[in-house]
Image (tube, rainbow, N blue to C red; front, side, top):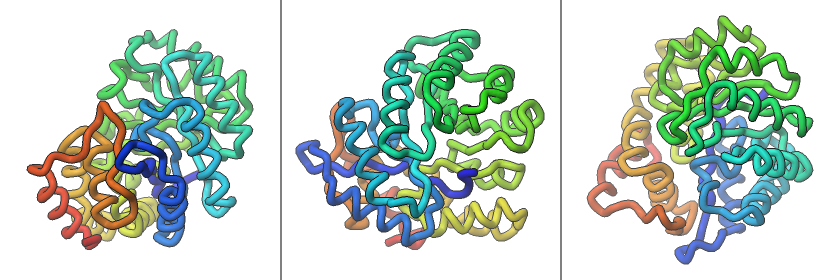
Length: 291
């Protein structure tokens, strides 16, 4: 079972947008040293939407190779075409990923029945643990708890990243799917309470910048130590907010570059962080003790 603080890893790029493979390796070593429990490669924060298929697979391959089994690697393989999601999921399995994370099909606005059939088709086609990913603020569709409950019995569907920030969703899914179905927060601002209320971990943007503190907070929350978890989370609260001052992953890539871990590269249509936003992010980093 993959649990704890799971970083939604940024994809390092040079200023001209080329992949920085040496930077990716350094970043992975940083996270393992800092106590990150697992790594998501090419999720939303990894700019999956602007990598071509060859680059997407190369980032997964390099991540699996560098991690070398020390922590689990979850590959982002969602798509808004079911055949493409199956293809990416199959390639991730063949490249050695431990699990796959599949965002709901964006832009198409599928119904609940469409979502059920989409995820069932991927799970039937590829034998690898698969994590559903619900982030309606980005995708324009919402994977409802009742549909999650229909999907949960499939042996290849092991959990969900729930990024609505609505903690009542956690209880609904727990009640419908039982304690063995893995529940990951996809909303850093509510992740502490999510884990205190029975969640298994968080797939985190904030963990890119403050991995050690994020891992400690999640450990405390999962152990039921609410006082310690909330104390640690207060140090992270400004990061949870300011890392979304512009569209993710713009602020988090700037912050990781400010730490000297990656170059200042990002892909259009996203651009580098606006100068007016730099100081709020910098202050949040200071509050978390990473600057």
